Length: 133
Image (cartoon, rainbow, N blue to C red; front, top):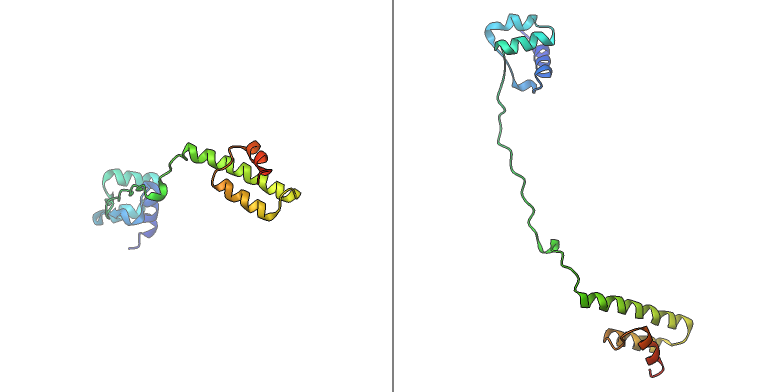
């Protein structure tokens, strides 16, 4: 006796998978006569249609992310931050001087080396020391 349609209906009504629906063999005629959703619910409450327990392994807990070296976010040190802002400003000044033709390439490279060695405190100091260079 084919009861695939009844099993599909029962699975839909009881909100479980088709493989979890179990029909009792003694009451197959009653299951065959069940047409409506209410009939299926009544058969379930009577114990003629049973729901199989969920099988399979238990849910695996999600692995917590370990904080690797790539995830460590340190604050940039104040000294470094000041150095970076000053250096960027002064490099911009040097580049503009080169573009305007006030200094040549050799002087520009010398200024860049001096910037890296932290010879200048500010733009003003750079402009004052240009005459000496």
